[in-house]
Amino acid sequence: MKRLFFSFFTLCLWLFVSNAFAQASLASIRQQYADVKQRIVRMSVPNSWPPEFYQVNVNQNLPATGLHREDIRMYYSDVDTDDEDVIYPPHRLDFVSTKYNFSVREFYEEYLYDATGGVCLIYARNPDIVFGLDYVFWIYCHEGRIVHAVVKCKPIKNANLEALKDVWDPTEPTDSEGFQLIYEGDELPARFQEIYDECVTSSEKYLKLFKHIDETTRL
Image (cartoon, rainbow, N blue to C red):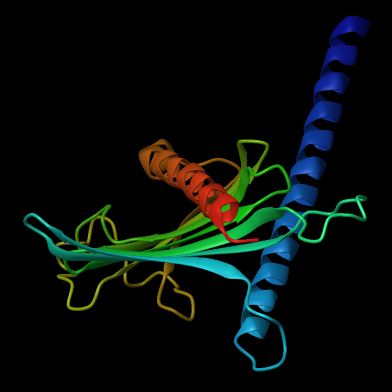
């Protein structure tokens, strides 16, 4: 009996500590995201904050879907160093935003990175999951593990609401942008796993792209 009680107590303690750690990580990620977004806003104000980001524009003519455009922006900061002889300190990728299209479908994504280069927040707006619905994802991660996820959706302009009645309920509350909450929790439903995997892969590609550009600038 004592052994069973000890095992139960240990499990409860582990769950408590794990939940507290996840909440602390979530708060830290949200603060980091707010700080980066504020810095980006300051860059657009004259004489406020010098603009520091790399931008890549892509224009392609794709078979069947036509003109494809991508606008990728990579925001970075200096890595702290104790070497007084270093004039230009190395850079660390903090944040990436990307806007692109396939035909008339428009996508938008944001990636927030931690100090090790791992993605800690994914924001993705995706109209390509259920025809007629626009989805948004907020996925918070710590050391490669999801700690919190939020999924919302809303009908696209001129959508056939009758055809969406099995996945969209117009009587449910929506936020200020018209999005309806369909999931919030500490993991991601299996039906959205592919979206998450694609975003993680994209975050890694953008990190490689940033490093390549950063290493070839004339400093």
